[in-house]
Image 1: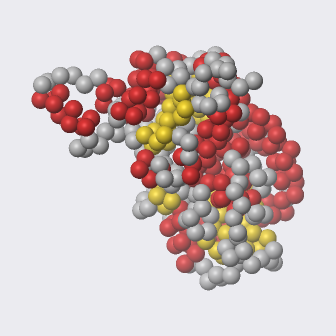
Image 2: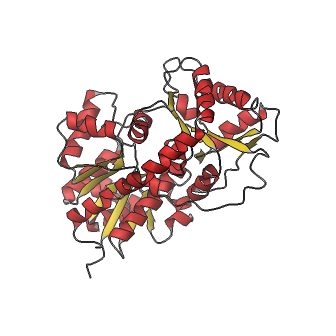
Image 3: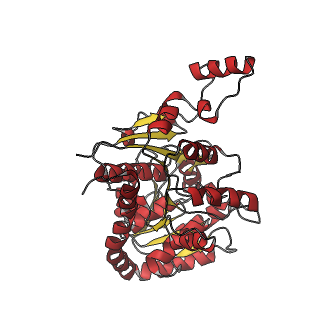
Length: 407
């Protein structure tokens, strides 16, 4: 029997984001399948809350920061008084420091952390943690990622320099694969699919939540999706959703279920954003808002019970795709384009919410989707076995790096 392996997962925000939760659940499941008995530490920006979440069962959750008044913090103060240098690894909490030193591999699992979408800079902690892994000679793995674009040449080179030194880079869509190949990064790159395609749904009772209609269009939207519009119109997404709702309510026996996928009040809260839309619609029986109580598996079950989906959050769309639910992506970054191109061979089931000028484009696409539900669902069902096989490809390549796992 091979010795148990130790893995450290970095780049996780918190389980308040159902997409982050889906990545953790499926990555842990893959590691456990490939490396039975493996020990896993998850660094979380919301560690105190995440430790109580069901997705943390069987893994250790570490705070990525040294908290004020902690023993490590007092140690810093002493060193400062003595004018002693503090090595980078000593700036980490003890649990995370120990995990960095003992891990067989460090996995950056954030999906799209290595882009400029969320404020990455050359002095970001994510890049600093990668450098610590390099200094310790611990294999660094960029896991299921979309890479770029970047706001500056300096940031792009900082990231690409690390990718060249990484033991493994698994990329979840072809646009990233092509981008890296264009910068000469090929030998350590493996094309996969997003791990969340493997997430198993968890059934919940929808009898009191689902609209009382024969068919249901699920909609996910967030304020974040319009943050990068050049015209600064943060309300564009709301007007788009309201226009789609108005259209669908003119159809016989169709209802709307609004589905939050990130719930982090007050600034990153899909539920709050969607609640404002519900308040503007005077059709309570046909337009419902899902409570913010369900985890990623349960939310996937909810989406799977709907007839169609329009979603902005990437992992909400993946919940739809992987359930063979015909899905329109409200794209606000390049990752959505790549995933759609790989699934369909085109991006006709996508509208770019950052670039589009009129909501009519989305309304027209929803009409077309309603006419082609059967064909789109059949296409997804045909593609899913190949996509799910691609999703586990990274764990097999990882076994070549850290040593033999499961047969």
